[in-house]
Length: 454
Image 1 (cartoon, rainbow, N blue to C red):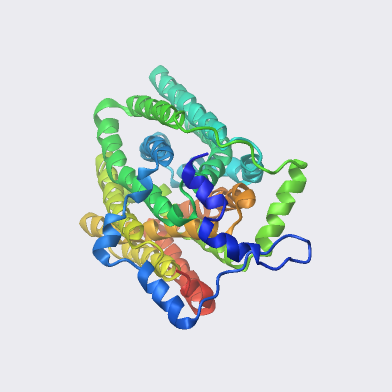
Image 2: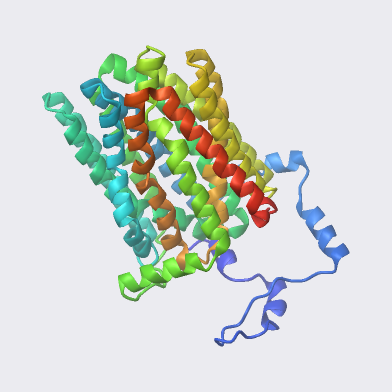
């Protein structure tokens, strides 16, 4: 484990005296209280820890100075590029084959089915097995699946049913890989850099949302979908290579029966109110904000009457907004993160309502910036706040519950797809926007601690 991870798991010399004097809890474990300072001293300390804006921007990429996190980040960058290209290629290919928004929703929901059923086991594995090994197994599996899809497209036997099966298999691998990848980040960078690292993760995803779909759209239009899948397979291989440079993190402390450890993780979540609130906000995002991404081909074809390259441009603009938002979050550090998370939900809801009101392609391109800004806030802040609230031995299991939100995506995608077929895509997406705004309003009115969270 790196030096930074040792700093995270053991206190520094300045805090040892405080910890050694801590009271003993009823179960015999030593409690570690927060250091209580006089009000003036605490205020002065807080003021000294808040850098001026120019200093904050210089810290935007500070987590990448950790070489192990840099390799993880580069591997994730390559994998996310492939995922973004696949979302466009698979969605457009299915709609091209079937012309059905409902079938498009079914195929995209295929990945969510195993995530819902297997994520809890994936989280338990991440808390007991070397997390690097789990990540690389998922990367290798993604490479093989993408290569298989490319070859079947060349053979002329591709069907939406095969894409549905491929989506299910990939979802099964992601249900193990993603909890491990999220849980390994605090081990690499330490708690003090966690928010910055998560924001840089979001920035990487956003940059790939900005770049990869545009490339995929042009490649799809001029070279065919099979070549898009060949590129996706190569990117998964590159991701595997980068991750191989990370040292083993070692097996976790979880050693009991699998079902017992899963139950222990669920009990831990139940007893943490803030973690529950953050997980519910993640669920709202999955149900109300994510379906638009899956149904974007319907808007491009039926509302804007354009082709795949136009879809790539819309996704790229949304990625640009998300990238700006993520870099802003990486720069500000631990400043009003709870309120920014809530405001991100409001931004997404407003953007969806505007997309429903204005059936104009250029207007949609502008609205995508707002949608991207909201997406960046939720994606990085939600996960970093959850991981800061959770002890390391439970991180894999808690993040597996967070990943289950994507398994619940059919609850948003399928009804929205059916509604889009029946009443049109604009009313369907408008309804989701209104529901997102209602959820954000409830949270901001009832969750005082979240509003004040830094």
